Image (cartoon, rainbow, N blue to C red; front, side, top):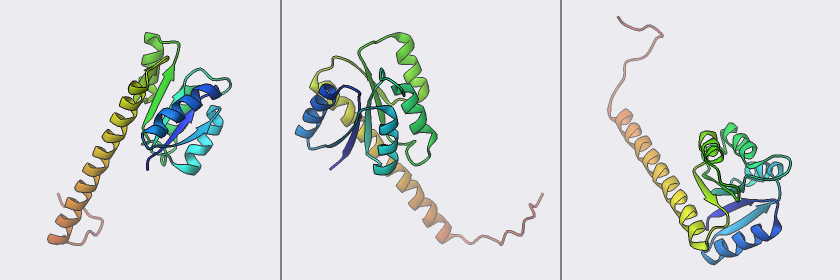
Length: 154
C-alpha cells in the first residue's frame, strides 16, 4: 500500500482527498501546514506528496523547497495544488521542482490520474536505477582492475 502525504490548511480538502485516495487503496497521512508536512515527510517518508500552495506560514512553494533541499526526501514525487491558477504560479512551482500541478477544484479522476502517473514514473526511475546498478556490479565482478595508486598515467 502506497502512503500519500496530503498537506493543506483546510480540513475539508484533506478529508475529500483522503476519501478519494482511500477508495483507490492508498494510505493517506495528513498535515495542516507546511512545517508539519516537512516534519512528517522526514519522519515517515511517504511515497508521494499532494500539497496546497496557499497556506499561512510556510506556503506550498516553501514546503517544496524544504523537501527538495533534504537528500532523503528530494526524490519523493510532489504535486502542488491551488485554487489561484496563474502562469507565474505554475512556472514557479515547476522551477521549484514540482512533479505535477492540480488546479482546484479538480475532479476525483484528475487527482487519481496525477497520483498514479507520478507513482508510475517514480517506479520506472527506481527500476532503471536498480538495473544500472546491477549491470555495473556485474561488469565490475567480471573485469579485473589494476590497483589504483593515486597516479594517473598520461
